[in-house]
Length: 303
Image (cartoon, rainbow, N blue to C red; front, side):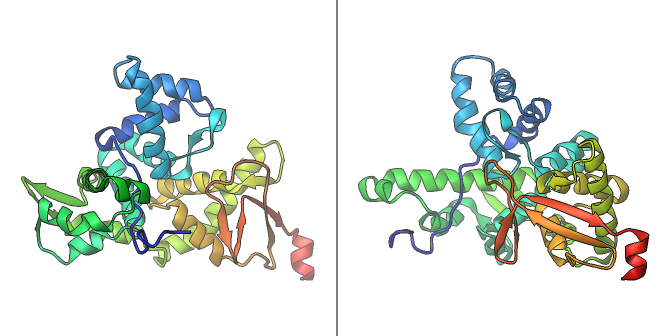
């Protein structure tokens, strides 16, 4: 339960390496289900010395996980659907990678509020922004009560890291000691995130079913699929065929709108063994797997 001191505080996670986020993502992309290989790639990225190992545990893993770009633990660690989409688009084109990164950051900022705050300002001095926001960031009660200066430093560092990520993605524009929103990029990103767009809705169901059948084929006929794998396959198909972004949140929203029983198919949601990460939330419950039974022509005919 939140303490009284931290009531109404904003949770801003540890996020580092904003300038190397694509390189870190490439490390996990090249070493899925291989924690040792992933760690060695990160250590090599940061120079290969012993201190680089702490970078892996203290920076790479927390940053990628807090951004929602990885999931799994130990040798089950791999890129999430969002992480895979970000890496794939970045490989195609730097600007497309930044486009996806902006979408993911804007989704995350909905629970932080920096962009909505800055939208009310034409421009603001960074020091003024920090002064207005330092007391809003959640930090440990112990740190606050025993060392207020340490708490302030931690809050300042997290805010600056978030500003750096937003600036790197080109949602914010930084000019010396001033920051402002790039309105053009922000509006484009909001359009990318609009699940009410007709073109996105029209293509979602067919791509979902095609992706499901592809995964079942790759699983040698096993009909129950991990929802995260379905997110990944569907988002990649949406982008490759239409250059349209489909984040995990958008996928979940559109899947929730589909009837689970129709005159052509029956969907069954379920849970499997393993870590409870990035579960699909539907009608008050969390799910991890999906099974779709497509009705035969005879069943459709008979209703």
